[in-house]
Length: 193
Figure (cartoon, rainbow, N blue to C red):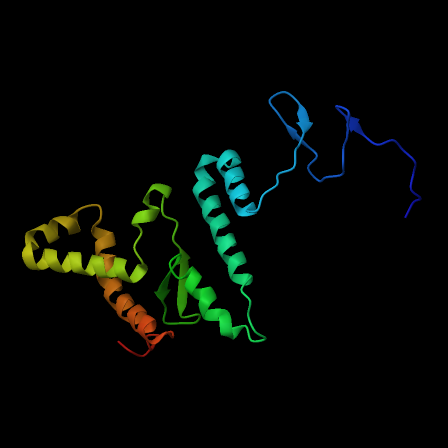
C-alpha cells in the first residue's frame, strides 16, 4: 500500500466534505452536495425513493419487492432459541397472505407465487382459499340458478380461463384446505386419478 499523502480537506460552501459513497446528486443543472437522511425506518425511505425514481412500469413490482424484503428482514430479526425450527412457523405465517401456491405432482410439490395486486386493489385481495371458494360458489350458483348464462360465459373471452378454473380449482382447493387444516403439506399421490 502506498504511503499516505498530505493534502487539504475538500471544502464546498465553507463546509468540509466528509467521505461518502454518495456525496453528490445531480440536480436539474449540475451536481450538488447530498444531505444525510436520518430515519428510524429505512424501509419507508426506500419506498419513497422507489416512488420518486423508479419507472412507472416497474414501480408496483419494485414496491412489492421492497415490502417483501422488509417482511423477510422482520422475520429474520425474530429472537429464537438455538433451534430455528421453534420460530419457523411464525416466519411462514407472516408470508402466508402474500404467497399463493399450487399443488404439484412432482418435487418440490408446491409452486409459490407472489401475488402483486395493483395498489388500488390491495385492500380487496382475499386469501387464496377464500378466493378459490368464491369462484367455486359463483360457478355453482350460475349452473344451478342460471344455466343459460354459463354457456355465454364459456363463449366469452374469459372462457379459456373459466375452463381452466373448472379443471384445476376444485382439486387444488381440497389439497390446500387439507394442508391448512392439518398444518402440513398434503400432496396428491402421482398414481391417484
